[in-house]
Image (cartoon, rainbow, N blue to C red; front, side, top):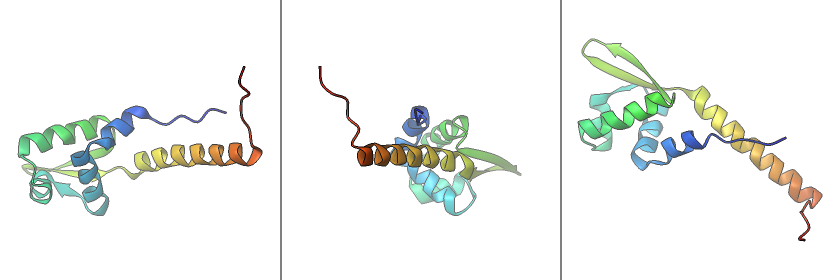
Length: 104
């Protein structure tokens, strides 16, 4: 069985600002204003990163008056963590069985 890790999601989360946003949202639901304050990023830059996170399914939005709140979707992070856990288990089993392909 081949374990697959979502490379697009890894690319999305690999950006330092997006990872910081994800870490902040893991602790509380925040609006763009809060995220600008917490990250020090410019509003337009932050909005672009939030759009990427939203399109990747990592965050969801909740309109509240003239503000938009962002919430982390833990199921997406859990799925990625699960894929890495399966990959690690496969590697552990391979090492324990001392499986290696012989050279021609």
